[in-house]
Image (tube, rainbow, N blue to C red; front, side, top):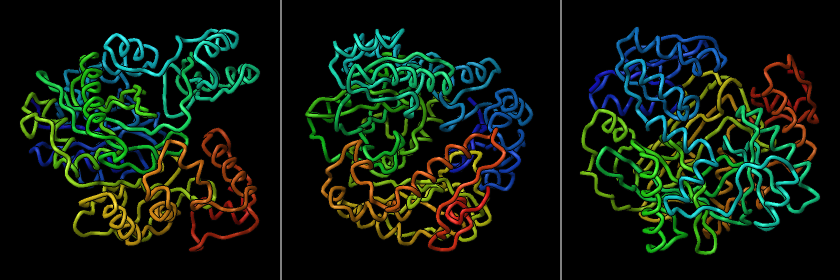
Length: 497
């Protein structure tokens, strides 16, 4: 049992965890880098400890500094949130070795599910349906042989990672050599492991995931989420429940998700992700942490999933008695990022000089910013999540549209205009979705000038490289709609960064 928790994270998830800890009667310790010293999570926590410079490697990714902060403040547990070290088995082990409680799954479960080939093998052994695929491949020639057995087109995937890195579609044998070399280089760069494997390429599947929570006695499913709208394998809009599956398929997927979690000795909150196409569903991966999109599940079930995590870690019974809850109504979440959709989703930086958050029945804002917050390039561009709940999907779409119109974030460009366009788009409203939705609807909130998009994408890649001292881009001298001071405005003005 513990009474103080160190949150090894920042932004909106740190704010979210602090709130749940306080509801459980637990004291909180925030950690912060130099650029986050006045961030909301620092101001809300009972204590705060500086852990280093702006670079994540000097602060939020430094295991030694995080453990030293826990020792100095007398914290008995560490909550990793999501991102950074949340799915790092070495961190989970280090927390345990320091005599602290890791508010998350066992290190072995993180390790198995973090290795895509090991996860596939474990799922096959547990009777979980997986997409037809191969073992890790040693060469492009071996990949061609595997692809012919699976059937073209195939998807090359990094064995040790996710998030779209090292992932390439290959349509024929002639494309394999180039794609294999690129996939292995990307995998090595992103994960320190160049292994890749092949999977059958599903043309237009939906991405549907099941939330589970496990304690020492049982594993409970908390229903599904629809996460098909994503860009470069990063989710943009999530819903609960999914209106694309019937009750029979819903029960089957939930049973399989529970089986998958049990197969790795899972404990805590986790998400089993599936691709669904033509009435079939296939295991994709398991996220061994709390998900960014967990609020939609909370709104339809009435259960606080972060508190469930804390209770499992403390050895207490689950809220609600541990029975699978019944979903009521429909919830939608829009991720609000500091990006400019009119310029190819180029990251936008600056100072938040105006923040107005919508309120009202069924409207929730999970944010990590306040007036005066600085938005830079050091961390993820997520500013917050706008979430709504209504009796049905159509009512939820109307409520989300109204909430988006009431959300004002000044000082940086955001994805709000893009989300508003989606809420009015006929295919979205008709629930005609797949993971290809964004690429099949390229005009939503994006510029009609393909040259400007190319410049935006090139600038985003270059600016992500901290070793480059400056980048010069030219976008024809156009200004943002509000004359903004974000990076996209500098890019369009043809200025030097």
